[in-house]
Length: 270
Image 1 (tube, rainbow, N blue to C red):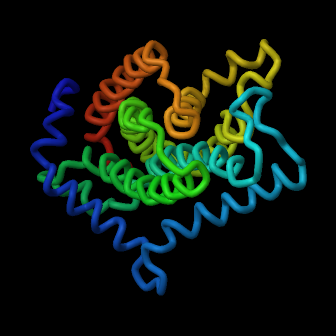
Image 2 (image 1 turned 135 degrees about the horizontal axis):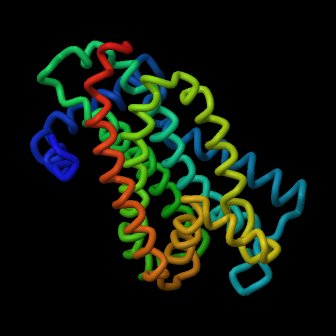
């Protein structure tokens, strides 16, 4: 399968992908009393901790404009928007370096399409994001009373991020077979990306010389745009999203090409 045929990986194996996503989600909560409720509990607990530390202990304020929250509930929603995006990104890419190693039995099955394993990771991460998004939307309705019409642009903002994540997942899945240290490093990288993205602060609050550096983080633009459409009722920056989409699509094509080029050596290494 050539690099240009990555769409075939979706269409030809869509039923298998769907079944594997369901299996992956079921395995995560198997034997748990609360089951899928953990999809709500985990982000809410982290939200509570971060909200308390930053808004109560450090008495942090959000920006210096009209978007500045007036109470803890608004600040919590702003934090939650960013945390959800980071969780989506981290869940998919943190598991990618070990996905082939953890499914070594599939490697020697010639008929099994290994390229769908990173797609499965993306699907599972999106599922958990949607669970957290439900909580976020519910919170917006409670705090503000209604959802802004600009919330309809959310899929347009998330799509480039998902494209980029899938490309990176293919790259990391391949590298993780040959460089086992990748799996150990990825957790640290995700923590760095969390604090170098505008999750707990606005980009405008930083010195000018650091603002361009923050935008090198693939999460920064997406976090800002999600807040704009969900919380502040403003239109997204389509120009910036267009550039992001171009780079994301390049990452997708390269990632798929790299995965297909290196997969022949998986069996020898594993």
